[in-house]
Length: 329
Image (cartoon, rainbow, N blue to C red; front, side, top):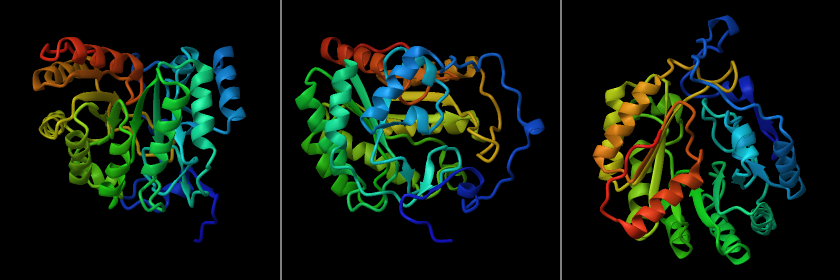
């Protein structure tokens, strides 16, 4: 089937060509959500106000496009994670609700629109992520750089965190671009344990993602590196612990651990709900391993309370570089 530029594939259509097949869930077969899985109602006036600002400036947020359960809370608090380079991804990750297809050309006005919106919202800390753009020579790294530069020109007091794709096959070019305008925090999520990559993160490579984090950290030692995992897709706790050690071995300083929630019946099913006690144990382990900050809990996402995590870590680094950080739940 030929996909036209700008045409979106969602749900069953998107999942029809993932490498590892799984049956769509039936409503009666879904695991019941435990009492600790609760999200704030998104239909508040502040959420509506911020959505209008985003639409007026032709911007997208991963909060909306990926159906994040924390949208109501974050939008009500005046924070958002902006998704640049469009709302169509070149990959088909079965856990993700972002549309697949052939993306449109980059919007040359996006960096200025983004910077203007950041200033309008009065953000002290902004997170910028993107869809995968395997169609671009540098995977979109130069566009990230333009966004960083423009935000710093328009809103110089705002700290910038980027949550990037893996720049498959283009990591060297991507790092060259980002080193020229390094973000305050560089985030790239490993998402799951290596055994599950073909099923959960097709098109990606575990070793490559670790290398990307390490290389950026070596090139920009003043910009902390960050990564995250979603739990409940079939991994074991010992496998999670091994990935946490791999992260530390590759210089990752900030960690997020959260529960995977199935966006629709067509998406990858939840295998189990990890308990708050298990998240607490993993946070404690993360502190022992030497992470500067660990955000670990059922509703944690890579950008959830990112402003708090960044401020606590940056402040700690500037005042008490050798003081261990207690786990944050």
